[in-house]
Length: 514
Image (cartoon, rainbow, N blue to C red; front, side, top):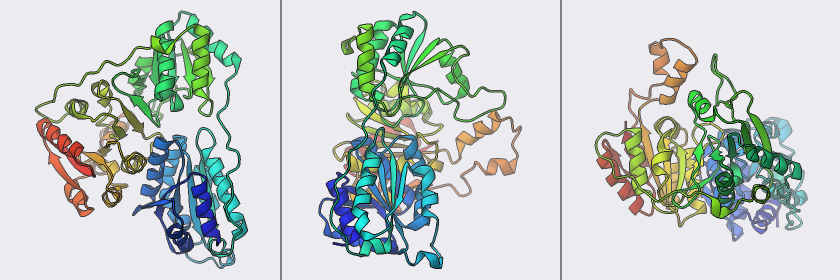
């Protein structure tokens, strides 16, 4: 076999069985190998940001890496924004990036680039295979690096001649680094804070937001009179009826300061010390009150289940002590479309076991309360802040979980970054209902302009936040990529459109006119 085939066979043997691709000439031997080898599903994206974002969504739902196939430095460059988001979410991904043949690089052909330099900031592990006989071993090392706790980005660069020359065979994945064990001292410190009688918060993210560790955190909080909260953005939160209810730290600094103002102790379980998303004049970066003590129980790469089990034992708490979210859906709303009526419509109609990919930006900040009592579901956030993740994330989640309805909540401005996702959803028959919140603006920036004290904006400033002249037509855009949908102008119409979207087994777009 050649190097490309040895790599594909190594990936499949190592449990990487989906490849999100946008290949070019230098990757043709890898493409041919994908055709020869059973066990690898190939999903084409028409833009590399779709490819990288879909790999993120897939791995968040499976816990195992997908691979990407990207064309040289510019292809990797197009994928960077969503690789940044994936890195912030601790998502495991194996990137395969084509490169010119080793002997051709010195000629500085038009697509020659510093691929390792481009990959470095969004990768935990980067390597260029030196020859075909090294490719399989390098691929196995990439799988191990990506799979290491808590989940990492591994980028393997594959020069064309290492793909087409003869290789030795298939490599085994080396031992994968597991999660760390928290210290007895960290458990004792957290238990002491809980016993202090002072207002205490368990602040969670990552693995701690899955159902079993959430049950533990909820039991500890109920037993000790503490609270449970998550970071503002999280890779995957399991919520809904019967699960431990979790509020998020608000995005708006003033709201976050108010929510956290009374806590004397914050126990960090995977989470970081809470800070503002951006800096603003005369506004603090840290969101906790002065004098609040932070206790690091577990880091993002630690075994948070074990940490919470130890803490529960230390304070005599049980999973059964936890408070549970009562089932309850809001009534179907009528009248005008507002953030509250949209949230009510979602809460009233959301299918059981749904996966929500949330890039609703300003429209969706208040969606949590009215969806809390809906049937159990998962909620995925953009953790890196680079817009254009919502639809690719939903695409990858749908590939990972074909038996679950995926609901994508997307701003119209953010959606334009990666609208090609709809084409992939149509081609693959993916079960995704996408709500586009069409306010015809980068609405969030209007508030941000005021918050930084930029004064009264003039026409040039306002035009940079305005998406009209012409208005985007999301139904035409969707239908041009093979996706049906509806446009709604009232809450009643939204209810009907959600029913229609949730009843179909393929992609469906709802343009919500705000």
